[in-house]
Length: 270
Image 1 (cartoon, rainbow, N blue to C red):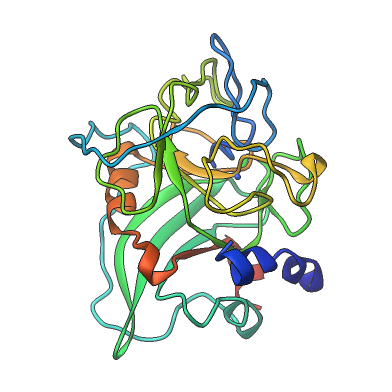
Image 2 (image 1 turned 45 degrees about the vertical axis):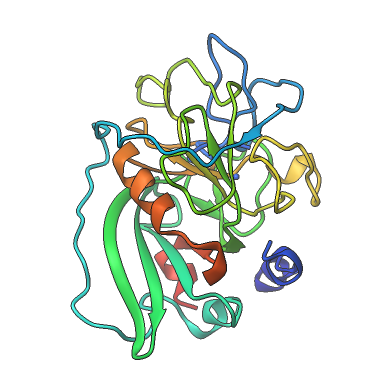
């Protein structure tokens, strides 16, 4: 399984390379209005004409769940929770790492922490409770499996329905970042794509998260993003509360070549 994960790393090496992440709420259901939803779109639209924006907007009110913990580590050091095989997949020029550590291989609950490399090691920033896919994690993602992909992936592009809140990553605003309907726990999905960060799993780097280029093929899962949490598991994406994704997007710096390391704790420790 480890060799398969390495097979998708060229996106990180060559281009510093889920379409909507808890939008891998993957395939986060679409209700009233159609939208290319995160991983396994349950609805379909033609590729959106996304507009790159550099405008800023005020932070929005927090989501109900999960709640942010906003705790920080007291000192710098090595990246925690990651074993030698996982560490070897992180590009040498990546000075920002978003760690998403799942509670279990079949669990939809996880924790997200942003680390930045310093002279004395990796410094942890805020820690946030997060959701991942309903059925947990997998090293061989398939469309409709309701699992999030395990691995190391680039973070090069952002977007959303709302105006740019101050993202340093290229930001693609579009009216097509819309989703309706209900989640797995009956919660409303409205607003889940107000802000998204594309995870470079099975996508082309440097384009809108809504782009429909899938290097591994559609059947391997699509539209894996980090998006606004709606209070329940996703279809394949990672989700955190709205005010926290605004904070995260303001911290991610393309000059530091950020990547996301994601998976269940046991797999990442290998």
